Image (cartoon, rainbow, N blue to C red; front, side, top):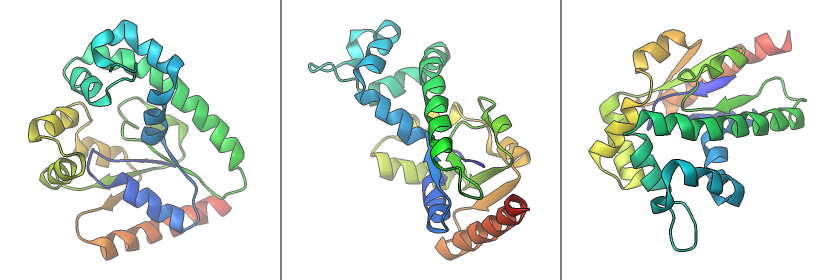
Length: 195
């Protein structure tokens, strides 16, 4: 299963709820974030972004990179061309280690934007209104409204995602409401997977 939602929608919280139900989850954004600790990957960034994104210890500044790519679509595409194949290769290895489960989830913020939904049997969207998401991200990342909005503008519109998704989980009406929906979807998917 592919699980997605806009920035600040609560994808990770929902994924963790599925994990509590015994469903292994692959966190694509977390895996991609770990690449910034890999020297080989970091050296691939230099031709795209130059030396200005690196500190004195040759570590890339993810915040600077984010500011650049969310204002420059060509640079975002170049970055994605390096990251996406690595994430998918890691995902393939991860699947092979989790073959004994009825179903698996990949949490991916840009599932529909890059056509990744085609590799999944079903898709789940986590939804929260834009103003709720903006408040969450400003608080979580200690960032500005403008920075959050720039990231949102690079993601597909929520209504488009809702239409493309097989299931939608509302994530702004409280934990009990959300968890009940997660459990219901889990039970539906299990019925399909175990047939």
